[in-house]
Length: 193
Image (cartoon, rainbow, N blue to C red; front, side):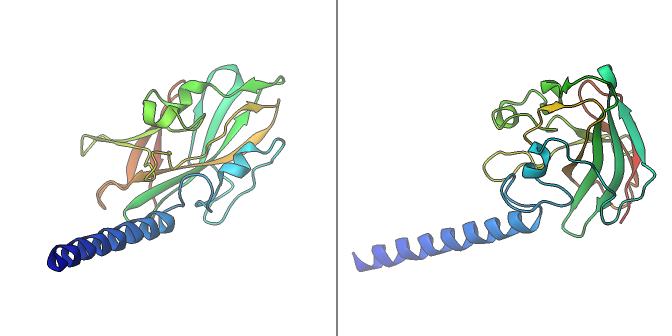
């Protein structure tokens, strides 16, 4: 009986070690999807009204691309950075170019139940690698939350909001992808790094 207990204890320790390693890995790759620091943006920043976007580290004043939607909604992409962990983080500014308040469309969250149950986000975003014939979806943390700006609501006329989306990285030879978001036009984005 003590052999069985020892074997179970070892398996438990291995499972605990693997779980801790995964938690550290997720934390190092962009947070736990809502509460920790995220690359170039956070859920709490997305909920603040009246926040003005400013160029962030690694971003230029000139956008890489612009996706336009209806009612004056636009998304200017300021960076698409490949990191050594196998991810691509896309940063940008979501803006209401119109004069009146605009509810950010819920369609931007996509239609996957796992993502939409976590509230309004940019979880419907995809990167398309035409050469490799692959589509990359927004990453999720271990609890199914999208690794993207969440808590999107109403943007006042002229208000802008810094946003981010994190994807699995395409192969190193792929430097251009098409960013797609429901209800917005698509655009070609150059990946740096």
